[in-house]
Length: 334
View 1 (cartoon, rainbow, N blue to C red):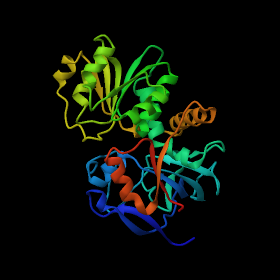
View 2 (cartoon, rainbow, N blue to C red):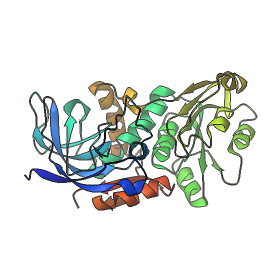
View 3 (cartoon, helix red, strand yellow):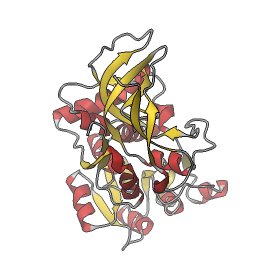
View 4 (cartoon, rainbow, N blue to C red):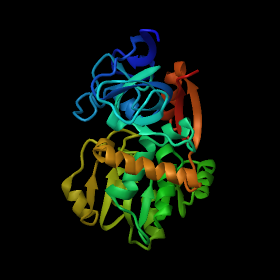
């Protein structure tokens, strides 16, 4: 094994043009860490936030410069550090919420790694980490959907949106979703969405209230952020819950407390995935559910595009441009 490796990172915050192919040292796994040889890295909005500097002041997701990007990966164990048990060289593993996946190798805390079952390909395992666990905690924990509940899922044809629609339907909920084209509407309907709203042609808030006879939905899952959040809040039933978990149109800077009352005494939360993957047990439950649902054929995972590692800039431009209809991956082994 060489002492150096390829990595994609940034030396300064900014746009996709700041991404650079770096010659970096291969990490040495420390106490409780595992060196993983990457096969795939996931492309996610959190990478965009880190690259652009939006998380520069975050205590949860630190962004020191220079920085190798990538918060999600899958590959094989190359070496284990001291104190690691239950993992051996060659094991197929995946993880999320640990930076450094845009590289040939990454050193990852062993407790964050999950073994990938033989029935789950590595590209699917990677796609089910950050976006899969996000869809799982949103539908199972942040708001525990059940029979008879209703939800509004923004960007239903996106990576999280597709998984969230399916998990919500598996839990018996009625699903409303927003999309931007007929093609994306067909995707959402094909995954089980009950009502699809074309946000460019219809006012989604008015349509939701019309379809619910003025009552609103129980929960809104909003990763669009700045452009939609206030209308999302007013799409809820009284004492409903608005979950803002991303900012594709820009991060939400503030919410007036009185608006929560005026929207129907609703609740508002802006969670981090890291707080829903607190320990190995919680990680195992979420990934175990996702892997099992995929293996049974109950969960469809759509890989939109797999980019060569050197095309990370194009991958970032694609996700920022809203051009995705599923998961974007980097092929690290290419």
